[in-house]
Image 1 (spheres, rainbow, N blue to C red):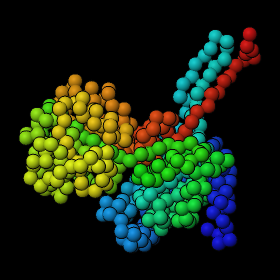
Image 2 (image 1 turned 60 degrees about the vertical axis):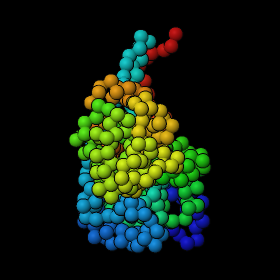
Image 3 (image 1 turned 90 degrees about the horizontal axis):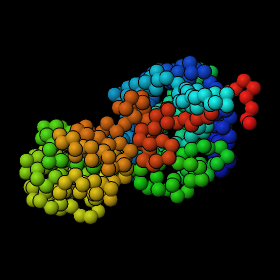
Image 4 (image 1 turned 180 degrees about the horizontal axis):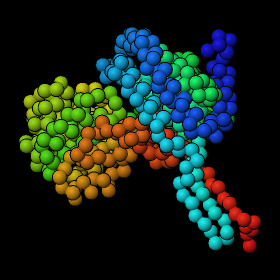
Length: 421
């Protein structure tokens, strides 16, 4: 950041440069965008030692700030995670270019032919918290969809995000694309976020990726349209027909694989008829793995649990804690999820196809699962290469937001001298 510049002036300059880059990217050849992403992937791997060194500074900052172990895990980068970033960049690079794809076409009796084709959104503002890999994911997906992007990472990941961003710029340079296509806000000052949210002259959509506080702030203050990524109040309902072996495997993975991600399970709803046969073994397995279980009703009688309070329902723990409650049937589970859920991801463990159909039909979460770990709620696992977030709203994009979801469309109408009577 230039010392003499105010935050509004800095953000206006970034916005103007992004808008100019977006105009060029809108018709950039697919091969150039692919080349930029491949070169960026090469740069990330070549500069991995620098990225890990930058990440060490962020981890120290996070420790001093008192981040929870789960949040520190979100922030941490090692060689394996950097390899994951590289893989994500290469997967997005290899995807079909969505820009210009024909979504639908038809002829009219008047003699006109109509095509609906994908077109970039323009300039995307992405505001995210501690996960530095979002820098690569968001930069890659926006570029693939022909959008310029303004990235505003969390204060905790400032150094890591800067190091990854430098690699993305290397990729743009190598492919001869405008360097301003992917910009990172170069300050931790929160005023930059407020400014970004009101830049209607430059920014076409805002994507917030973080906790309830961040998303709430964005929704309150934004003058630019928002793809909301709300918290992951993720439920697993264990039906009376559930298979014990499958349920144990899925619940353990959904809760303990990575507790700090939005697809981590936060609440178990267990059919009252299988408390002893399935509920108890599942809760005991969680406790053995170090999970603190806040239980209600008959489940609270299981040794090692603590009594749940009203605050435990609808709570995103992002930690080795889970809430658990007995329910009468699938309808009671649906009612609980409707009341306390966040429309992110919810799962049913069941062998009864009627219960599954009812759960799928009567809930309106962005992602509904059957006999599968909720940790699959991820764009990479959906074959999108990466994601910019899980949109929980209902306008435009919903669920994992990949390159295709970062496009709009326009109509191309052709005739041969056609006139309207």
